Image 1 (cartoon, rainbow, N blue to C red):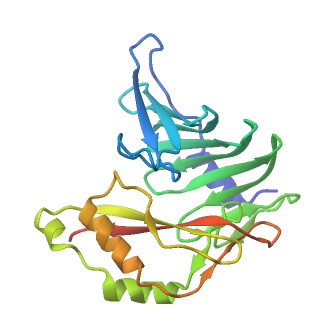
Image 2: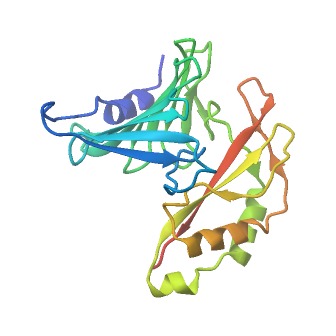
Length: 255
């Protein structure tokens, strides 16, 4: 039986998206080019062009984005809208495998980042996760009916850095660019590093080039390049190490 906390939060978080719109009204369509991290790239960037997103704006506050490979295979559907019952902006994300079968569905409160996610194999739900912030997760693993507490989402494993060393590196090397400070530019650089099952990896790269200014991105990358500690590869549900991307946000915000 699911915990009372899970039921309580789910009632608040997971209710149908309140898409109130007239089907006959004009719908604005937008096509965006995406990199392998699902972030927008420049129109003339052919090297990092991995996915194509087709966004349909249903109203000012609701939209649907369908993401395809360059061979027109559907891999993701993202719906954004306003949850009228809970009065918060809501995002629903569905992911699909190479055979077009649903692998996961996540419904997130965009105000606080809380989410509920369900995971599937061959069309059957194998587990679920409720995230409540501050590394607080409730997880139901395959073959279990019980929700267990955890400090990470085991269905979406990521490699790990030495957190103490990483914090020291940023403290010593990360500065706010003077040019950005003068114009009060803020933003978040999402850094990405590919780590194989043996813990071997390359350098960090910028995952969201169109969403953060060049000086902020450059500063984040130069600070991250100072990290020379161990990178622990991600592990799957069976405890086996796997290849995976590590994503780390670095936020620049002025007082």
